[in-house]
Length: 443
Picture 1 (cartoon, rainbow, N blue to C red):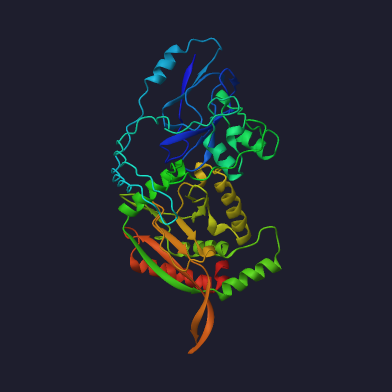
Picture 2 (picture 1 turned 90 degrees about the vertical axis):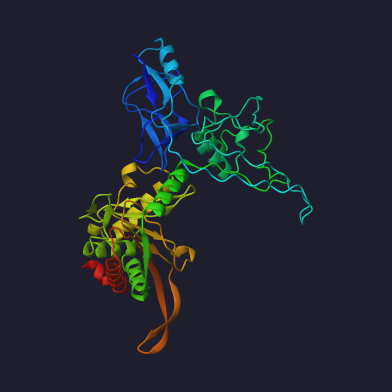
C-alpha cells in the first residue's frame, strides 16, 4: 500500500527542515537503507534513510523549501500504478503545527526621501514594511526578476548548491541541473567547479556576480536553519538564566613552554594546541568541582560522573558545539585529534545529533582573534561556560620587581541557580593552578 512520508525530526531541537537535495526522483525504486533526501536541520545536513522500500510516486516539496516537522514531503507505494490520489489530497489539506507566538518586530522606519549623497548618488525612498503575522503563510514568490537559464525557463537551485556556487564564483544561472524538474543540486555545482559541466547561456564565460544596484543601501539575508536555532537558544538562555561572571588572570609561561616541548619531543601528525591543554585542564578541575560539571533541569540539578566538554566551533552559518565525551580519561594527543576531526565535520554539517547534544561544560576560545576578555552565554541546560581569551605579554610583579610576563584571562559564566560565587571562584582557582603548573594534568 502507499504511504505518506513526512518531514522527520532529525535532531532534538529541530522544528523545521529544508530539503537540500532529493537523492531519488519520481518513478524510481528505493530500497531499505537508501537515502531519499538530504535534509538541512538546525545544526547539520543529514541523510533521510528509508526504513521501507517502494516506488517514489510523488515529491511534494521543492528543494530549498522549508517544511515543519510532521508535514508531508513525499509519497511511497509498493507498485508503480497504485492509486495515490487520496494521499495527494491528504497532503494538500495537511495543516502545519501551530507556531509559538513570537514578539512582533518593530516596523522599519520609512527611508528618507531621495536626496544626493556625498558621492553624488540618490537614496531610494521605501515604504515601511507591514507587521509580520504570527503564523507565516507559505512563502510567496519573490517580487524580483526570476533567473532564467539557456532554455529561457526558470532556474531552480538548492540552497547548499547556491552557496557553493557563490563561494567559488560559479554562475549557477548557466548550469544544467540534474535534480527533479531540472533543479541544480550541489553535484552540478561541484562538476562546474572542476570544469566538467559548466554551460553558459550562450557558450560564453560565466558572468561575474553583479554589484548592488545604485541607490540600494542594504540586503535582507534569510536566516539559515542553524542561525534560527542559535537565535532561539541564545535568547532563551540570556532571558531565563541568571548569569554571573567571574574572571581570573592566568600566567601561562609554563603552559606555552610545555606545549612546545611536547610537540618537539613527541612529533606526530597531530600537534597539540594551547586550547587542547585547556580542555584537559578543565577536565581535571571539573572532577574536583562536580557542581560546575552539571546541568539545571528545572526541578533538579544533574551532576555528571564523566566530563563531557562541548568545544565551540565557528562555521559559516554560526556556532556549533561538538562534544568530547569522557575527556578525563583521554590524553592530550587523543584530545587534539578528536577536536580537529569533529571541528572539520562540524564545518561541513556532518555531525550526528548525539555528537553535539548534551554535554556537561562548554569552552569558547576567542584567543586566536586577539580578544583579551569576553563573557559567554551559557549553553543551556549546562550550568557553566568558560570563555578563554588570548595570551598577551604585559608587565607583572615578581619578587617585588617589574617583569614581562605572559598572561591569559579566563571568564566563567555560571547559572546562579546551580553555582554560587564561592563555588565559581574555587573552580577558577583550581583551574588556574593546573594551567600554571601543567604537570598537574597528569595527576
